[in-house]
Every structure is written in C-alpha cells, then in structure tokens.
Length: 400
Image (cartoon, rainbow, N blue to C red):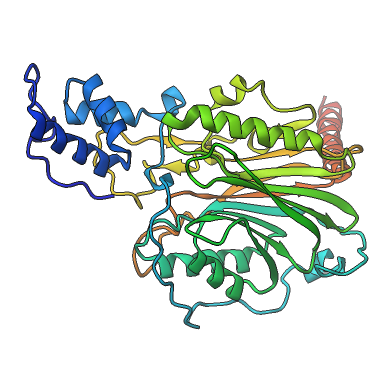
C-alpha cells in the first residue's frame, strides 16, 4: 500500500524529543496507513521505539526469514469489494481434457454414484489470490483462471476470494465444482475437477474467536476409489495475532486427527505460520507431514510470500521479508494411497497488461503419486545405479 509523506521525515520524531499530542496522532495515522494496523497497535510500536516512525515500522515488520516473524500487509481484514467485469475476453484453453491420454479421465464426474480407479497421481494447487487488492483485479483474476484451466489440477484451494472473483472463477473454470466458505467480504474456496474428483459432502467449521472472518472449509470426496478429506483455511494474519493463529491451528489439527484412517487428509492454504508456532502447538499429528518438507525442503520453493521477488506490494522499507506462509499438510491413510512427489510455484510470471503478478503470493502446485509408483521408480533408479557400477567393473576387467 502507498504511504503518505511524513511531516517528520523518514525517521519520525527526533531522538530525545517528545512529540506533542497532534504529532503523536499524526505518527499513529501514518504508521497505521503504512502497515495496515490499528491505531492501538500503532501507538504500541511507536511508544516502544521512542516515537521514531521508521524504527517502529521496522519493528512491526521483522524479517520472516531470520526470525520466523513478519506479516503480509495484504492479509489484513476485508476491504470493500469492487465489481469485477465478467467479459468474455479471457483466454480459455480448449475444452478437450489435456489429461485424457494419461488415464485420469477414467474417473467418474463429480456427483456420479460410482467411481473407478484413477491410474495417475493427484495434482493440487493452493493459492492466496489477493482479492483484497483492488488494483488490476480483473486482469489478475483472469490470469488465475487461465492458470487453473491450463494446469488443470484435480483440486484447487483458494484464499482471499471475494464475491465478484468467486462468481468469475466459477463461470470461467466451469469444468470444476466450486465451493465457497462464505458469501460476504472475503473467504476461501475450493474447486474440484469434475472429471477426476467425486464430491461427497462439505461443512464449514468456524473459528470462534477470529477477528478476521476466518474459518475451516472441509470437503469429503473421492479420487477414483481413494477417499479424501480436503481442508482449506486462511489462518489469522500478522505476528500480533499469533495466539489466535495457534488456537486455529490446534483446531485444524484436531479435525485432522478425527478423520477416519481410510481417508487421505490434505490441509492447505495461507496458514501465515512461523515454524516456532507449529512447534508450540505440539507439532503435527502422527502420520502427518509437511508437503514441502516431504519433497526434500527445496529452497527455491520455500518462500511463498517473497517481497524480494514479488513487488505487487508498495514496499518502501529498507529490508524485504520473505516467508513460508502457504503450506500443505498431508495425513496418510492406512494403508497409504497417495504420497508427496514434487512441489513447484505458479504465478511467477508478470502479466503483460499491468506488469504485475497475479497475486502477492506464489501459488503452490503439489503432485501426489501412489506409494507403489514411487517405490517402483526408486527400484528402477537403484537398478540403473547398480547396472552402471556393474558396467564400469566389467570395463575395468576388460582393460586390465
């Protein structure tokens, strides 16, 4: 967000000088406008830092990479939603299923009474699409739809959806069943690919003490004959709401533990978590893994909110934080039917019109495979290594 010019210069009040009531009020307003915080929060940080505006802002936005703290200003409470045009000029890919040749089209469409085995792995996309930023909202939402339609994942988790963008996504991504966790201001949503996911039921679990309209959307479904429990949420934002965020995380993990062991449980979204907060609630339940960690913790796909690379936010502060806010957790079924395979970012290309990214968050595309497939791949790789060693030994024997 843009900040108003400070009458006190970039540092606020001069060190050792106690500003008067009007100056303090002005500093609070400037701090609040820059950070998106409340006036009470502004007063706290300004008092803590001797009414030095720049120091107070730096304190509020501590670097996430080093201290596991930080906040996405775009994660603040809902902003008024503007009307999103629903013109037909968005590019929609061919209606032919690009996965038909792979065998995933063998599954029944959503709502059918029976399902058949799915031979390929499951692809899931989770993405905070920043619907609270009204700038270029039409172009950015079109880009989100194009990404979904071109990648065609089986399941999509979306956060910071507003009524206008949900209606647009529902219309443009019509090969999906669309489910929303709310109807006002902003909320989360889930898309289920009709050709591979069979919808069973849904419910919304409220977070009783949220101050930001957050909740947990839970959907029971099937991927072929694989039972799924799918959950998406947007946990409380900013480091000042860490206590509430941990309460919400505990509630989510308790819901995971309640699920039948025949279900593969997948939880994903903009969780706003710091690693220390996961430890503080006792860690993940048994048989539950962090998808990114299960894929080997690839550093290039760690920071989903990265102000060093994504400039959608107007960021004039001296440091640029980057955080792993967006996460996916997986509780395996017994026996295991799906396992993490690889992870990558989406939404990393600038849009031609506005020269911005689709969102201030990168999306996470997660690929699952059947454990037997992974095991077979490992055995092939092991055989290749063994054959290579045998060939090298034979060659040395011939030349000796």
